[in-house]
Amino acid sequence: MKPDLFNIASFLIDGGAMFGVVPKVLWSRVYSSDEDNLIVLTLRSLIIETDGHVILVDTGWGDKQDEKFFRHVHLHGGEGLISGLQKRGYRPEDITDVFLTHLHADHCGGATKWNKNHSGYELTFPDATYHISRTQWEWAAKSNLREADSFLEENIIPVEQSGRLNLVDEECELFKGFFVRMCYGHTPGLMIPVIKYKEKTLVYTGDLIPTLAHIPVIWNMSYDIESLKTIDEKERLLEEALEENYILVFQHDKDTECCTLEMTPKGIRAKEKFNFSEIK
Ligand SMILES: [Zn+2]
Image: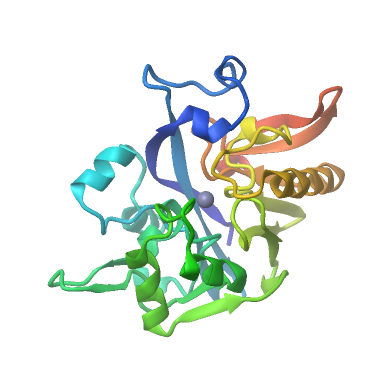
């Protein structure tokens, strides 16, 4: 069955923070912002069936936090997590594996939810195994001042208590045709899925290349913990992707779902842009 991609919800974030040291006069030509300098990001999740597994990649913000928290995030649009899955014929119990690229709140929040009487939390996908890299898990557990706002206890502890956590130690073929690439620049142990579909290779670029505008290797988010590592990891991925004709799939780009790459005088850039549904 063909993998599918859907936007759980869009949200707003400071454009300057998303483009780090790149001046606004440059980034605003390729990614639009509003009068408060906020830009729209999507939260696209992948759903993949392979070898008897039904795998969901990332889960969006979820809905455990209060109104004040979400006022700040400005959630809007999108299909919703459960309704987006339902539209594609999946109930929460059908998901066998939840793959979390990392534990920042916009990626893992939807993996857990309030229980029925609002007294505690439970897994959103009760029968799934939750896959997180060991490096990221240990990093988030000790947290740090820079990422404290992104590593929320209520998103992490219930997964640990469920006993359904699988810590991924290294790069591997986690499921048939589903490969894991480990990255360390955005946050240590960010997992990037590389998926073989028919003759094609799809890379879900997550927070390594959040939007098409982040393809230039030095256009990076200020959220990255180690920019030089991000630059190196992007460079290696982009070179391989160009060579092997991979399709990049963007989690956060409001305008573009997928692209192929080409070499230009300025370096590797997007070639064709298209929607995930156009992948044959
Ligand atoms: Zn992140």
